[in-house]
Image 1 (tube, rainbow, N blue to C red):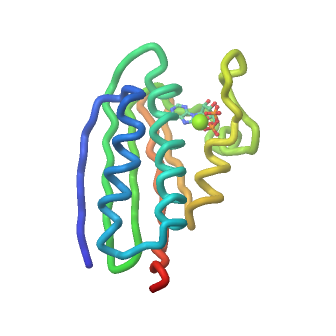
Image 2 (image 1 turned 90 degrees about the vertical axis):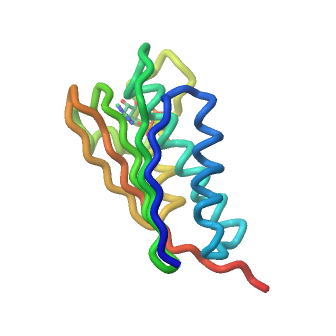
Length: 142
Ligand SMILES: Nc1ncnc2c1ncn2[C@@H]1O[C@H](COP(=O)(O)OP(=O)(O)O)[C@@H](O)[C@H]1O
Ligand SMILES: [Mg+2]
């Protein structure tokens, strides 16, 4: 099964759940296990939340999601055109957060890395951030 979806949506908290469900639904034709789908949902939530909370802090922008399914492999690209990240390597460290005042754990990227097969982050200060996630969709046991 090969499929592709491109989606542009308002960066508001209400759309975190929507996007995780939409991407999960997109992956269903590959017949993934519940555990695999939950891993994808968890990672997508973290990436989308980051766009809203960090990328568009105090503003409302747009999130672009590009998802591709090639056979049993899922490729997810999540982009914002917000503030960008000054030091990507540092941002990806466990427990690193720039939001100490709030209840952020600094584990968003760690979670994405743990639950997906690959994670790549591209960012430019003042221009935005793109997160690339891939996952081999493991079949449900029959
Ligand atoms: N889309 C984004 N735009 C701007 N900065 C981001 C984005 N995603 C992550 N960051 C930066 O990377 C840091 C680490 O992100 P993360 O691991 O998700 O932890 P947390 O969200 O709890 O701070 C954030 O505190 C923020 O500074
Ligand atoms: Mg986060």
